[in-house]
Length: 435
Ligand SMILES: [Zn+2]
Image (cartoon, rainbow, N blue to C red; front, side):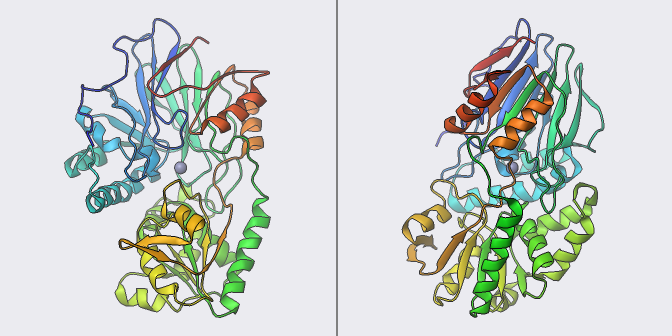
């Protein structure tokens, strides 16, 4: 695969917009993840929001960014920050919350490691990563900072601890960029609240869909775990390292403290960073107790012991690697065990293949997994009714939808377009909005 080199493949126009605000998506328009967007005004004030990659096989990358002095990262998921080390080329300053900055090291190191193991080229190297780590300008929520003539501040976005919405006050308009958004409290992240703005750039992952009641779904999940344990089985819970795994620990610790829960994989390191930034966590003491309550797996002998546990919470959340596959390869021989999926299983991921075919590639072999599999909707994104309610409460004149497939954005457009101008941008095309 040919990767871009600076200056060779940018789709970005040379001149600033004559008037109004320009939004130019390098990725993340009409697709989930892979986000990167340049915002610029006629006075050459310019910022890059997020620079991620889609961790598919092979990964998808956003287009090349033009030179930027400032980039603002909404949160530490790889589809939002995965390409940020490449910005070392420009010496770009990275703004974000303290927690996003703290977790970025783990996420980037893992991306580097995975690309090495899988043999996928990456556009940045370890030195770029070191430069990027030194480029962070961390901010607390509500603290103003400047990008050229613009005043910016971060607000809680729900989703995961440290995830931020970005308010940008330009001389012409106030912009709110939601990043990944949840308007409900989750076990670990306090909800997003609406912010008055002229232009709302909103994620739309769950456009057209409604979540089941969160409490009921958590209840169904806990009962399922207990059923598996009471028949003598182990529940394997593949969970993302940054967000879902910690939510699972909180739920189980609260609802079923008698369980023997083992916690393995990258999530353990991410949680330690969380505990170092307690101001971003909803009830940080409860998170700390849940973390101490779970048995952390730190080596091979711990891993063998975990095979006799009631519950194993581990990465990767989509069964694409990590300790989850090591466990699954052993647990598959006993039909009393079960796999409980708690997150989105992307097209082409191990988890999706398991659901569709009952098989999974383990260490190169297509392996049949004759275990019970159940799926739970514990999403940390707002659903359709919540997104539309949020948008109305921000009271914008313009809404730009991204981070969603076409069906989802169309559903939101149908709902909001009566009262507001709604835009469905495309990657590598320029959208100019005159307020
Ligand atoms: Zn996210």
